[in-house]
Length: 301
Image (cartoon, rainbow, N blue to C red):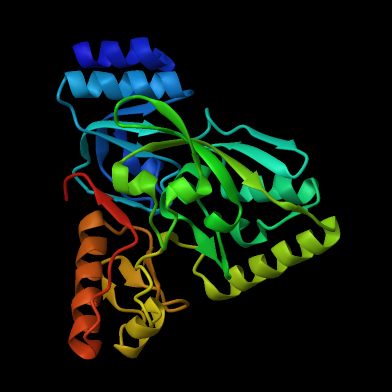
């Protein structure tokens, strides 16, 4: 109860939930209860909440909208800190967009389009927040965050807020200084170019059609389940291993796109985890390539 009171004092009682089912906060729609689920609204609050966790020797995890996350069926013992709807401001100034970490990429891309700014169309359908996109250098259809980020504000493990240039962010394939050093992304400055609004909208519509056609958007999933192995495509390896439609309970390799593991409605985290292990083993046995998960697993399985 003392921990609960401290968290309420830091973030406000209305922003602290106890025994909160994580299935409500992940795009997989899977996950047992977190001991505490705290919605943060600013850098000072995040710093204070992390400090509370460290002083009490309580594990914590920073998340956005849960689009790349698998939480164990028995939940998370500790504090989940969500940077999402209370840190999602987007501001356009000339050819730059200032975006808080909790803003969705889709809404940021829409704001860019409205301002006739081109360069972010690739991200318009990625189901994640700016913080997660910075952390993992999100990319699609030939575009990556490193192509449009000018700088970002981050919170270090020492509680210091720093502004890092795109070069200092070390953005690579699904990695960054943020992920490697366990920093917290707070805000990004994107540098785009002036373009034709209708052409930008047309490109976004074109990419949306491709996603609808090729991706299992009607099911819960965490997007691409595995990272792209060098020289290969994960989905193609999985398909060629004969695993299209492979199921463990209600978890399934999508028949529409083998790079996606979907929740057919009642999948457990244990089923998804087992399926991922089976796929990894089968692909390695057949092709000698070990797939690495892109989905982050946390909690007790």
